[in-house]
Amino acid sequence: MLGLYIHIPFCKAICSYCDFPKEIANIDKQNAYLKALIKEMEHYNLAALTIDTIYIGGGTPSALNQDQLHFLLSSIKNVIDVTKLQEFTIEANPNDITLEKAKLFYDFGVNRISLGVQTFNDYHLRSVNRKHTNNDVYHAINALHQAGIANINIDLIFNLPKQKLEDVQRDLETALTLNITHISYYSLILEENTKLYYDVLKKKAVINDEEIEAEMFETIIKTLKSSAFKHYEISNFAKEGYLSKHNLIYWRNHDYIGIGAGSHGKYQQQRYFNHRSVKFYIEQVNAINHGKKERYAYEPLRDTFLLGLRLCKGVNIAAIEKEYAIDLFTQYPKLKDYIKQELVEIVDNHLRLTNKGLLLGNEVFAIF
Ligand code: SF4
Image (tube, rainbow, N blue to C red; front, side, top):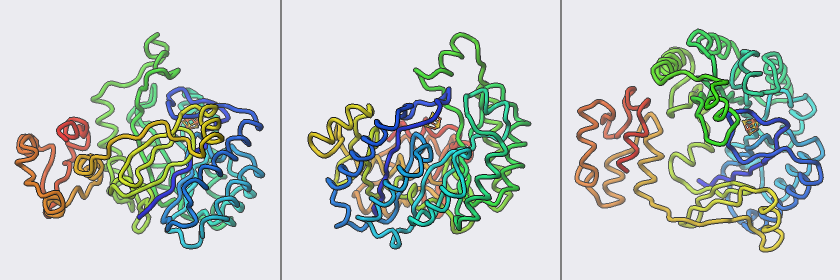
């Protein structure tokens, strides 16, 4: 499997918790960026490759206007046969989705939309500077269905400032009434150098302690597991047949090419990341046709565990022992302790995190 990730680092407003590569830019800068993206795609000679999935993420890809999206999608279509893709996803904010935009996506082969919903509570949305409302979500989903796109993910966040367990329960109830196929449910991470981080430091915002966060996560898992959604990755739930094929490429440690400012890639036995600054990215692509800032070691065994353990099914022990000529417990003796502490378990010859381990994944990941 080979995936293509394309980053659109523009947003109409900046959410207080966000540390993704993004900025508010004028239309000239956006157009210069799109031209650089196309140039970088040419550098990888995508026409000669078999691409299985495309994911256009951000930032906010849907923040581009109709002409810009047309330019981007038609440029992709010129080099990639989109009818052969297994999945073609674009991220969008609910208030950007019009029927016109939804039809444009459909016409250019996009068959999956990931909507940045975060919560259905307008108060919590405003508190983190999200500009859409609960109503926009319903309009967006209707427009997408009308245009012929039925494979819809919603991103939700729990542990937002002042959010209570009851709020999360209400968000879950609402999510389960929607005609969607996939839910990504992430805990808010307080990243340094974000507005929220400084607000918390100055005590202008308060976030819950770890116990409440864990309670919220357990409620999410329990509620979604008893619905039509299958829990298949730490933070991801899908209806039958709708697991994210693109994201599975990451978790199964397959190759993907990252295009655009701040993108990461794993390709030809190397991992790399591009310049985060849009300005530097454009300058470098114009000079040498790609935006790579740094290449770094690809460690297949470590990465297979770190990524594969995110999947609820876990990693196939026999396959890994054979491929890397190792004995699991000789290589990682601490695993025995984690089995005793019920953080990991072996089921069907797969090593996987237990429910307790899902909450403390980072502790387990540290041994790899
Ligand atoms: S829309 Fe997404 S990328 Fe943009 S600021 Fe908000 S969270 Fe960050």
